[in-house]
Image (cartoon, rainbow, N blue to C red; front, side, top):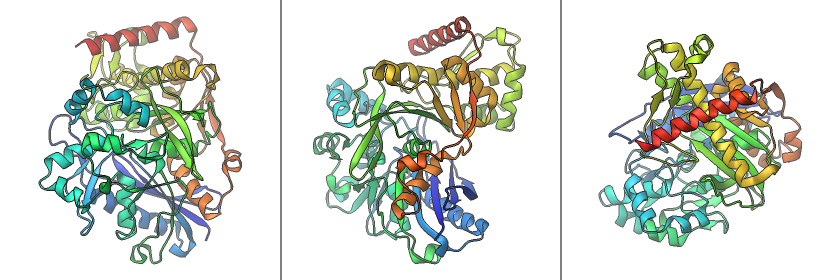
Length: 494
């Protein structure tokens, strides 16, 4: 058995990538699915879409590679985090559409809990802030709003899971209800210091413990697939939330190493090792990965809108037809105009955590056009990343390494990566394998299967494609960032 199948279930599409024994990608299949917006600030997915696109792309990748299921040693899963599902244990039928991580319907619940003084306890135990982003209040909403959900949950008839749990359940034919420590750490129900579901928080949110999945290491046995799916049973041996999987795929195994992933949102993680560092700057303390029962912790900054701002240019403003058009537009923009876009379409994430904020544009003139909007959109990603790294350095001190490893779709834009290096005043490293999220999931499964060695050996295989060195002078950098901070302050004042 020479291959590893990585399932990468994301916010807007599902992908399957087959890796060979050297963890080189050999075949990929991808399928988009519909986004549903039933009310302002609400975002949902059809659970059936999540499962059907995963099953279809997995089969398609195997077919493209021209291999048999008997050649696959293991499956690794990585997934959009915090997205919340509840289903019937007997039938496997969801009780409601999946509530996506971007959804803000529980903002009032979070505000009430905060006003009642519960945030400090929740943050101390989970490392998270009271925000609609996380799964806990989404579970509460489902139990409160779906008919008979709460009594059924209390009787043990229902199962809660993030997307990984939903996929594991379907892949194993309902035999396994499990998650890994990284996904559990994003629910706001999991005590990351003690490594268990927190009974006090579950009681506070009215979440019955019978609803919750078993929590395992990132590299562990999560059951085997139904034999009818791929022609034989294949063990599921690796699971991690998408940002943690990218941290593994970027080989950020040493304390102080940082990575930032640019997908729908942007997520930067700083490895803090065995130290669970409480943030004084409204970052999240989370589990980067857990192996052999020992968690490695991280500080994380979450930006809700990164690649999604390019989708907005395409689908909302309709000033581009393809994401590739943003770079030549940005290059053609009049830099002197200094248009600033704050893409708070679903609120501001770290380090501000203002779910009530909405997007804003500053510095428009009669000459402002598609080029200036494209430039401002790409620059907003760099500015938001600097916000995160400033907070990380304040929390972690000078031990944070100066180099930022990057991955995700937006890293294909050399212009965007150069601006990122310029505004950070630090080198930005883009690896040869940019599919680091799927690579991380594949590596975890390969290590558990005995196909790959330990983290130190895997780290040696990380290869640099290009380093972007800062070329902007300090005075220009500081002036630009000062204007961004003014724009943020103005946005929050509305």
